[in-house]
Structures are given as structure tokens and as C-alpha cells.
Image (cartoon, rainbow, N blue to C red; front, side):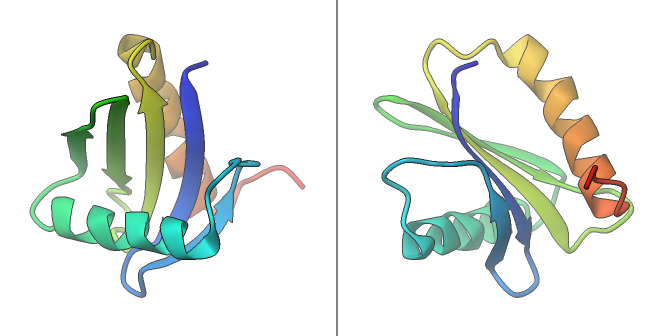
Length: 100
């Protein structure tokens, strides 16, 4: 809840591999978010950028560091619930254990 866009990305190529049904997000916009994630996560595994309407969270997988998760969130997002859920989601996707 509150996470408007969720994108799984290959950070080494700045390419979004999968996303939720994100209204208003073009492929170009998603790939721009991926480029932003690559810069933000250059020296870490979690990053955040505030915007006027919310914030963007970026996660880099610790085992597969070329893979990341991008969350575009509204101001009302429950960050305490989102952080562990997003990290678990990324670990599952990066390990190739996503449900069919």
C-alpha cells in the first residue's frame, strides 16, 4: 500500500526486467529510474530520494549486486512495513525463486 511503482532491475545494464502495472510509467521512465538507482546505490545497498509527492527507495541485492528493486512511493507509505517486504522480494527475485 502506497507503493505506486515496483520495478525489478538489472543495474549493470540499467534495464528494468519486470514491473507491476504502473500507470503512467513508460519504459523510458522506468529505465531512467534504473539509471538513478545505479547512481544512488553506487556505494551501498539502500538509497532514498524524496520528491514533492513522495519518495523513491532503491535496493541492491547483497548476493547478486547487479540486481535491484525500485519502489516509487506516496507520502503515506508505511516505510516500516515496506523495507523488510521489499528486501525479501528482491532476495527472492535475485535468487530466481519467484513464483511462476
